[in-house]
Image (cartoon, rainbow, N blue to C red; front, side):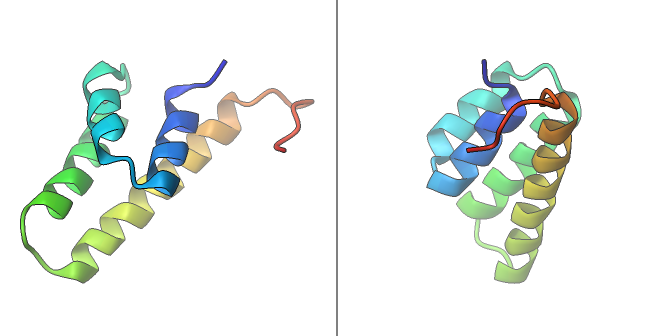
Length: 78
């Protein structure tokens, strides 16, 4: 079973913004939802490219950290 964090990493990898928006609404993690919202707002509305890139990296790092905490120790990554 995949967590919201695993899905976030997958959607970021695939640039699947529509799925990321749905995940933002359904997620119970408020911090994850806020980080997704900031990224999607940066992608949709024109702003500095560097700021959007930083939001992308920030969301990726947060999702990766949380996914590693929720992953079973004996689970293989690939």
